[in-house]
Amino acid sequence: MTNTSDYALLDSGNGRKLERFGAYVLARPCAQAVWTPKLDAAVWEAANASFDRESGNRWHSREKLPDEWNVTVDGLRFRLSSTDFGHLGIFPEQRDNWRWIGERVAAARAASGGEPVRVLNLFAYSGGSTLAAARAGAGVCHLDASAGMVEWARANAALNALQDTPIRWIVDDAHKFLAREIRRGRRYEGIILDPPSFGRGAKGEVYKIERDLPRTLDLCRQLLSEKPCFMLLTAHTPGITPIVLENLLAERFEDVPGNITSGEMLLTGDAGVRPLPSGCMARWEAAAQGR
Image 1 (tube, rainbow, N blue to C red):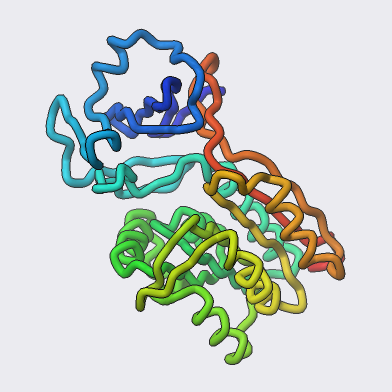
Image 2: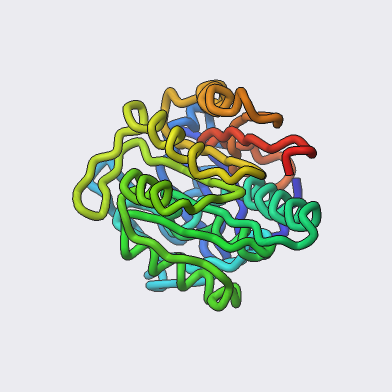
């Protein structure tokens, strides 16, 4: 496919991926890229910077990367920065999900005659899904355990002129927050969650996806309104496959008319570039009469 955004996958292989983020080409580890790269080694070596985990988490740069720079991906603006963990502040494999979120919110608003659509985004990181929902007209609750990531997401909202839209910015442990929302009687038409393989809450609470995800989904199910619209569940944990996620959603939506789809999330580039699997997703969408 032809990529018109500031992001593109250029190549992958030998446990690495080569990507373009605006003006900068970066090489980073990627365990699932077990094939041979297509591009010459010289192209990889010409990258502006590379990240290495073999000798400690370190960036190696041909030239100093800026402390921050901005990119546009599918019409959304993001502030990027080279973190100590090799992340940049964006997960481009979520692009199709951002489009889907926007479409679901727009459809729900149209079907309800413009009534508010409330969306909860858990483990929300730098806010790509929050931006997609807010841009489509939803009121969003954005939650992450890291105060720094919530501030990063707020900066991204400002980059997109969404700082005055109805977004609640919450720093908290996911389970504690969900339990409080249930007690308060708050409900949401859409819920998005991308739970980590392992994470720590705002007060040191430990989250392990294999142990804790079923409880997270049970709490989320209780928070859906009487006219639910969608739930999007994504994961980047080895062993958590699309069918695993699909089964988890199916278990909780047996009594609600709707459809579930699942699949791999992909990093993509121009024609001829091998797509790179980068996590999995499952989506539940209410049947037409459910809204």
